[in-house]
Length: 74
Image 1 (tube, rainbow, N blue to C red):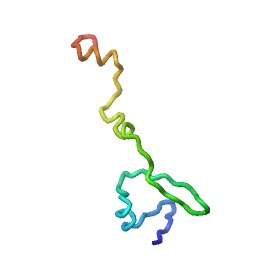
Image 2: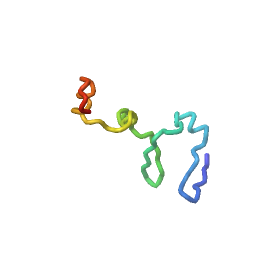
Image 3: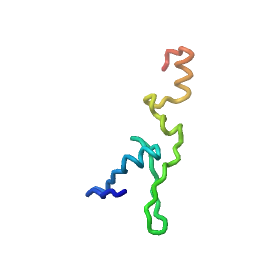
Image 4: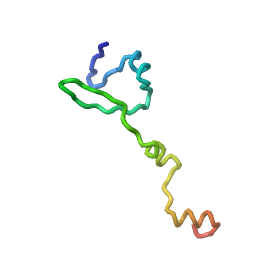
């Protein structure tokens, strides 16, 4: 299978390969060069990193405890 590198360095992975390898939108790939060949592998992902920050603005522990206890000084 062939793909052409676009002006900005983008390449479309052929659908048959995406389907066979389970590559979907949002899949992180890691690229290396081995013996003159470009090798792409699914990147190891940390499940915590995928959801970090999804609940909004960070909250310090003391403020959170005060909110839980109902302290009016938050």
